Amino acid sequence: MRMMTNSPVNIYAAVAIFLLLSISHFPGALSQSAKVCESESNSTCINKNKALDLKLISIFSILITSLIGVCLPFFARSVPAFQPEKSHFLIVKSFASGIILSTGFMHVLPDSFDMLSSPCLNDNPWHKFPFTGFVAMISAVFTLMVDSITTSVFTKSGRKDLRADVASAETPDQEMGQVTSHHGHGHGHGHSHGETDKELGTYLQLLRYRVIAIVLELGIVVHSIVIGLSVGATNNTCTIKGLVAALCFHQMFEGMGLGGCILQAEYGWVKKAVMAFFFAVTTPFGVALGMAISKTYKENSPDSLITVGLLNASSAGLLIYMALVDLLAADFMGKKMQRSIKLQLKSYAAVLLGAGGMSVMAKWA
Image 1: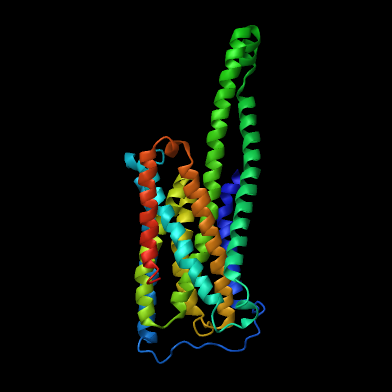
Image 2: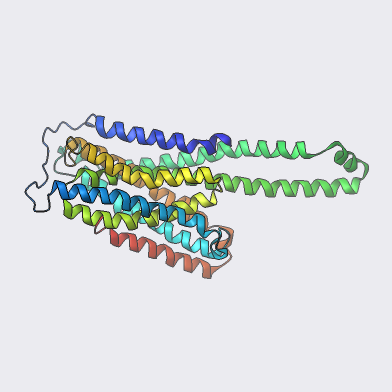
């Protein structure tokens, strides 16, 4: 259990290092194209000095809105109506899950399709095989594998730990009392097992929430760095203005979804702060990285299109799986939702509202 709760920092650091290496040293991924499609350098929107100011503004504005979004569920818990066991929390979580689902389908996946079908890439193999769909599918299956195996490993570990705690809690006096009275022994034994099963169920559900929170954040981290990179690398002020405004709303609502998952995982305040920090800084970090490598990074070069396109496809598969399976299906098939058709209808409306709102934002980002 300790290994799992201490792992997010190591995982996020590894992902960040992998992204840096892949973006700067990607070998070309079977592309033999020597051509580089240049962007419209004669556009009236190209202004390096003004773009630099907008990028600096975007770093701080996206950072602030991301922090507000991811931290809002932590403080909303003090409001009785929005505690995790209440119906209002499920409705808000459904809204946020709809946002994450739409992010995968309407933002990340189409970007990957556009990049990997770009005329800047060779026809063979990029235009003769649907790499985006293939990578997204493999990513979803891989996420399922990680989700399943991780849950199994920590479930077995949790059962052993819990049984050991229960066994050590039984004192010699209690055992003597159970032996001297047959009736008392039967009642005590049943009560003990009932309490143990209840504690085990609660503990295993908590483990599921923690696995979900970690895996979901991994997908968001990849997507956030990639989209921040695109903002930092461009000098098109018209593009930056639209992107920054859309990204502020995007990060806030996506942060609400992640914050709700972190809240249900019941981490301590230090781990909550670490996970919130990584979410909040990834997009600004991507912008800063794009600014740093803007002279060598060409967003329309084959290497860049392939690298970012494949990362977007893998991120899309992960986000779509998490939204549908671990967030929406888990809640809608849960006991609380199944007991109330009215609550289900409200939650479906919240899902459609969140997904619809994020779909509209796809026009700008």
